[in-house]
Length: 315
Image (tube, rainbow, N blue to C red):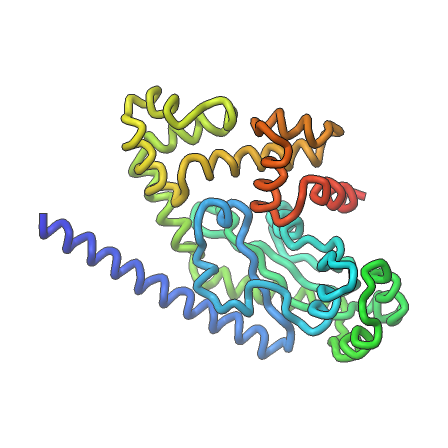
């Protein structure tokens, strides 16, 4: 028994050393990109990784976790209290996974960034990298009045914004895209197992096929099956199944089911005209208020806000 425990401890220490070395190399690469280009780098975990567990992205400094540039801070500190007022990084993260390669994105306020997805073990989308922010040639040609037009409804301090606007670098789409392509290749060069936690998660699923069976049962009917019913169908005691599920999935059964319900709700909000109350009921929530609470907790916005942003992005 002691031998097995020592062996397990050795593997754990080896995993920790691997992760520390890997994310140390990733941090050095991101800092190098910022130094060479003079641009800001942000890296957002994918929704799947964010919902399942903490990802290796959390090993990076907080400064890489969001847009902290002067221009963005001024826009977010607007009088309307609406933050960016429509720019949704989560939507862009999803878009990057769909496109699968670097592309130039211009936010609602007129700032350009090059965006590309990062894939880990088994080609799982684990994160999206944003490099910017710049005034593209098209926006620069229209001048500051175009920026003001874009953020007018937010009540932004235009004097401060003008000063930040003049300090932003100017860059054409072609050059921005070349920077993204270079960074994409560099990050790919760090190794095929980009996110070690994702790799470990896949290994855990392979070790416990009953959890894979449970996930296949949950996916089509997330609101129709209880933890006890699934445990019974797998011939497991509920308490054992509950512990095993949390061990493998890094979250409890109810959290995972809620996540699947919200995924279904997002699809319905985007592709159907059903009322929010009807969608709430269809996804298995007993009260619309509880649905809204959970939806905002997972996505960062209310169902109404999500539907509006999705429909605007489709235009």
